Length: 220
Image 1 (tube, rainbow, N blue to C red):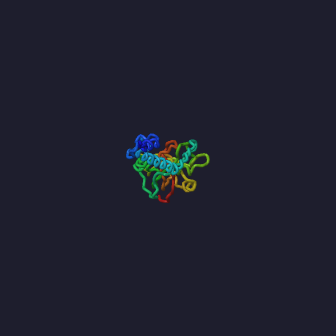
Image 2 (cartoon, helix red, strand yellow; image 1 turned 30 degrees about the vertical axis):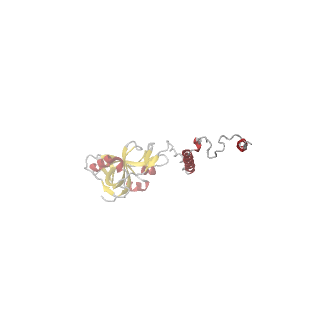
Image 3 (cartoon, one colour; image 1 turned 135 degrees about the vertical axis):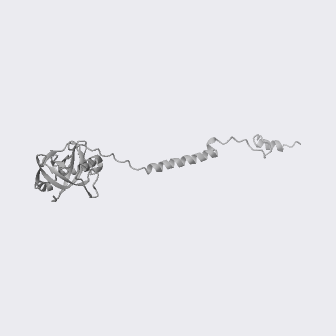
């Protein structure tokens, strides 16, 4: 009688191509690219970058508000450039005057002890400029005018003697008016010895060289 066990086992396995040899392995399809090790590393790097971007956006500084635009029709004032230490220098000669003029903005605000021969005080208009010396601005009235006198800088006999516009604060107007009157170059002028704050050539005063009277001395 024929042995049918082998045929029975094969038919029960549904036509397994390996037959009875179970040591053989099935053919497997290659791993897709998105499951490769390098792909997994790339996913981790991308996730870290996204996380950093999100955290960075949360920590951004608020945008600074726009700077205010100054009204061009209103002149601003600028502080004095020099003379902040309160020292006073002598400036009696024409050479001192020329030195201060040559220093330009560096000399603005310097306190200078000098001798002046001045005409009477009058009201002088200030021009509208982009920036104005703070000392001039503080002495201007509501009509943008300051009290000032035309003066000659330097002692009598010092040549050449320079012209300067002396701005006189109201608190010194009485002492200015009581200063002795002398005749210089056939013109009656008040003899002033005192300390002035150098302003220099001023746009607000039509480019005239100016100074502000700060004190009057009784010395003669």
